[in-house]
Amino acid sequence: MGAVTDLLGGDVADVFDPVAMGRLPDVWGPGVSAADRQALPDLVVARGCWHEYAEGCRVLPLPTAARVLSGPCDAEVPTLCVEPVPGFRAIFRFLSDETIDFGIDLHELQGQEGLDAFCGFLRAIGRRLDRTLFLCPEGADVDLAILWYEPGGDRIAVRHDR
Image (cartoon, rainbow, N blue to C red; front, side, top):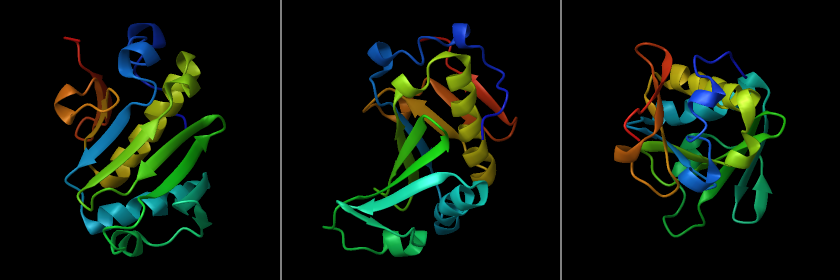
């Protein structure tokens, strides 16, 4: 799923610095619909990515997004671990039916190869959803996004006033 990016690792090294960003920064895709939510597991399956769906400690077959989101509100948060390329995992949480959100481990994304893998994955999701996706420091709000995918220009942008 890695694609050539328009970013060079040296230009965005601070974005992928676990000290500056937190080890596990968040990616947010706000304003999604039920169909958008289903597009994510469909993309994972279509791309042949390794994946593992779990509810609490129970690993289960990948359900439809509608089934995941219709679970009881006091249930453990379901997670979907996806490995777009070997050595890089994204962990999707199903916290809201209005956002797609996942965490990444910056230790898995070092160097240009890691940057390309991440940008390719971000683009694939953004293209499928036709939505802006934001990379934010661990625990931060979308207002503090450092990097994002813009579907209109099909590009990755970086905040320069950081």
